[in-house]
Length: 419
Image 1 (cartoon, rainbow, N blue to C red):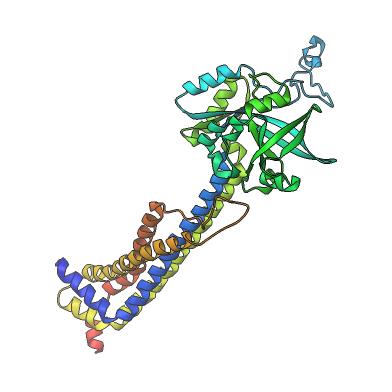
Image 2: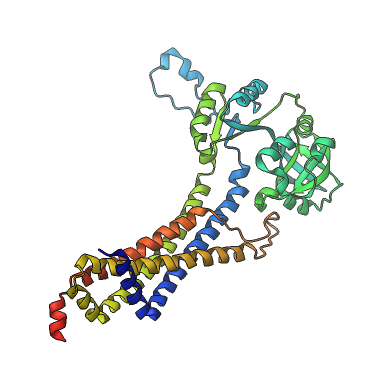
């Protein structure tokens, strides 16, 4: 089999009907362009949403949950052991929210090589006092530097400097929506009331905006020291330990390990954000499905064009077989035509897909809800271009295979006799 001769014959047949070949290649180009652009945009959107929620959520959160006592006094009575005891209106056990021996736990976590970083936190329920009106709020006592290092805290500070929490005593960074409701400007002093009824005055040093307005209406941030002081607690008081891991996927098993080791409640990021991750997976699945559908539609176009080419080139095929070309060689000729269309259309599809992604990436996208996003989100992950290339070749190969198989079975004697 003369490979060079077969390739030249395939080229001649393809150029003889160059308009049809061009139409097929344009179909592949359009499909690959939209496939790459759609996946880049959809996964860019997923990455943006991940950064808003998942990347700002601890991989593991250690805390003490308020819950009813599992063992009631009746369960300890020997007369009722082995029986089913039904107790109504069970009250919480009165345990404190504080994590006991948190300094030792933090030291152990720092020595764990699976841990990327740790950020302690205090969560306090408060009321923002606005004249005669009390607004429900939550103050998060944080270590500003640890919070910024692990969760890019400064990216959501729309006004002010997050380090002011550490350097300015009795300072607070308000959620932007809460500040708008209270008409609180930077430098103003606001009054809050703790759950125990104690009133404290705090100076506003910045605004925080997460992109989730319902959270920004209640959430605010103080330093750990300020939060301990307004709650009247000691310097060792901590209610949460946030852990970020090197490998996110190991969070469930490590959380279970920490729960048993430290005797605290532990929740992993997969459990805490199961619904959100499901939404991201469905969006990615839809984008893949649409892109693959476009490629399959283009494949049917190539199939029809090659079928017409075989019908119109019956004489040429008969001559080829009469001069000694086998059915296998004829099949290879038409498969080469289909693969060339796929490679040619796929190549330009990748270029146009990348170009269109760049254009979308530079389109302004300004929304007050997400201040740190200024353009439409795009992901340039190379795997989308690799998948597009593979699918373009596979689709055109199978589109060409069946017409090529048909061409290989043509009997030259029947064609020549008919002429």
